Length: 373
Length: 222
Image (tube, rainbow over all chains, first blue to last red; front, side):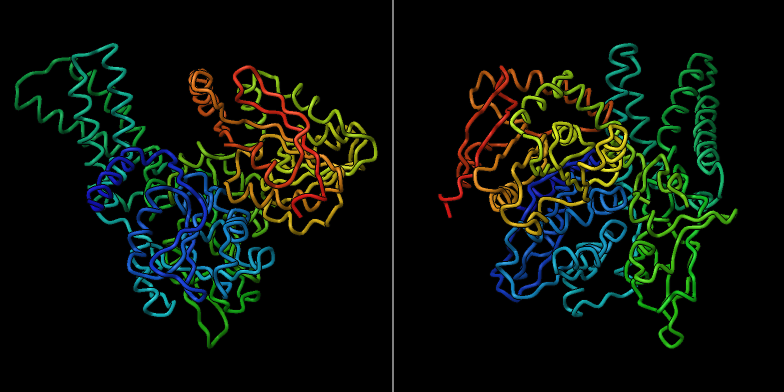
């Protein structure tokens, strides 16, 4: 029964993935936890909590659900909603301090852009341990006594997640299109909805075929849109040839409608994935820069980078960035570095300091870039 | 990187917040706040919890009180500081980036009044309990707790009217400004249970907005 409920909840909330879905904050218990049991913390996005609950099944532990305004961990942290205050608040007000003897809490690694261990320690006296990116890796993480391998530290974009993204886009689009066509062109209702769903799935499932183009620096989204639109128009041409019918109205309708849908879908296709940086905010022209003189090989960057850009060379007391090109500019490494050895810099030499990045979170207006030093 | 569009929609901009609140309350908030702080005297020490852009606390400062505003949103505090400067109230005001969970750092019996406008509705049950406990601790004997906030109407008919008005308004405000409020449940009861004496409660006609004045009775509940 429980699994049926979980599947139904997953389907419903994947359809509404675009919108925040808050659930109750505070302390939850799993199994028979005692004063030495581990304490986990997550956001209050309902689907996330459901997934963490599944991962913690069979363990004796505590889970703290912090208020992230119903937004998932990564978006919440990078957007400033899952922040130091929210973590401190749930640690101090949930009653966990009376339940356990220790003062260490395991956070999802993707909270790195928003939560600073130093601030949390100073304000609440708790130390933060960075757990794995995905909740499903928690049992393995605990078995290894808190050690993470590269696999557990990286974000992935497998077919299942791509389907989730396709559904996330297709559902609100098809509801809107359904309403509009019912009012104005009832005849087109079905075909337009079919187009939206099929095309959304095509865009995300075919992602590996064209994804390398998303790495281009400027106007990447125009190229991808052009590619997707072109593909569709070729399909339309094949269809017309096969049916021997060249109806101007038919071409005009589908040409315009498909362009609209494609523009909406691909306006930030890169940003809809966890593996490319968004093409919309100003930060995209900046790169993470590492100052080897300031670096003391603390290794925080390596622990929080969801793209495994960093490697810490302990014998030379320094970090390196052998996979810098994979960076998605979440800013976690900059926020976490205890020596301020990392920052954003563009080709013109303009910098965004760690201080600014800790203060201003990611958003479309590029406020970080506006608050540039 | 996760969708920035989502972030854009959810980004909390102080300017938008002020505008959103104006729409949600038909511009009545100003009057409500004036009435709420009418008991504050010159020279008193006042703490405002969740001061936001300073709508409530700057009114108290204008009355001559020595005020401190706390909020977890640094950008909102920037706007509040700017306003304080423009109105020549820098000497009377202090702002700190702090949440209610840091109220334990405030000194015992050090404030004449604690105010809060539209903040309790953003807190969880745990946070409300924690906040009330510490507000009681930091208030002087007979100090005032002044709250203006959204509450849930009890009567079923009022509930229906509340939602009929609130839902469309909420949608408009959310689309336009991405801000919203959520009503608190049983706030007066919680305040009484903490050991405050409620002296005045004023509701609007649908009983979904409450202004409350409570006094700290140090002898009881301790």
